[in-house]
Length: 212
Ligand code: URA
Image (cartoon, rainbow, N blue to C red):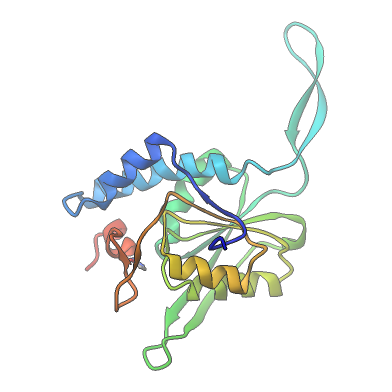
């Protein structure tokens, strides 16, 4: 029985090489940030593979021809604050016209459930491919909550993009949102008792923004 009906591990050598450099505890904030941006470009290439095309007529310096262009409403990228922003920047370089949304969630210390404190997402989500970005798919609680919210707002064609996934988070997503494909650079071993991914890379937000 597979962990998830649609789990893609991007095993491109450049992605794997950069991910190893990011995992290293000696990587500086600047290095970590640069590598995450570079990897996000490569992941964006894979996650947008299913975008539909239409044909348009253009004139090259040589002749008139039919050529493909992206079809339909602009893609929506939704970043789960705050570490999602590290993936967002690179993807926006590749798809500069994408619409962008943000969802802020924190973990209630008593219930350990995600509580939403902010959301601002593009309209007409039902007509867009929506890519939710968060570098770490750990317990899956915040990803599931973010996707619940996007579905309530009409999103139907959603993908989840992360850098590292734990089997626990992938299973949780498969149970709650089996229709949402997951794309990741690596599937790690497990979560520790604090919900951190092992071997992982530590706290992605702290490493990205230099907080501790
Ligand atoms: N969030 C992180 O930043 N790191 C983990 O390992 C798990 C969740």
